[in-house]
Length: 162
Image (cartoon, rainbow, N blue to C red; front, side, top):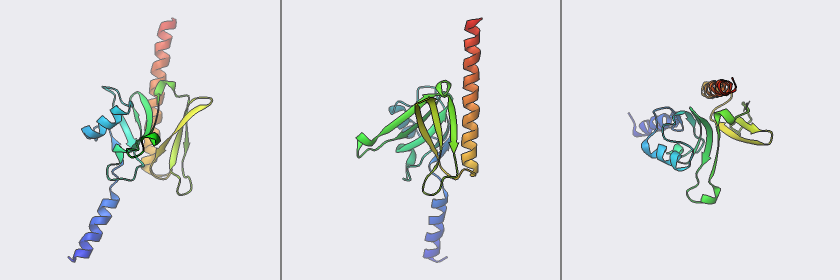
């Protein structure tokens, strides 16, 4: 095979890989250390799904949008300009509403607005189009975990009020 063909095929394979999407158990210790160091992951907390929109070779080390068994969070870590670093999170039980904004025109990403009150919210960016299976899976799994957390909270409150 000609070297140019090998280079083109290799480039296509690399571009086809999405280094920014991860599920539970697919994180390196360095990646988990960065997320924990940002204050967004406690000991014993498990990341269910994470999407990164960093566009670098190690996207999880720079940016991520994820949910765990306890919270929803997003982060942007700018190592060259720390003043631009940003983190936002909310406990699942504190979230009032999840509003999907999918199929946005290019160059905007699909996102989920996470509302914790009438004037407090942040956006969780999800790679892909709104009809993309990964985007739908992320949103569906997030909804399921959010509803479960709120149901458990309501049951616990009910126990104390009896």
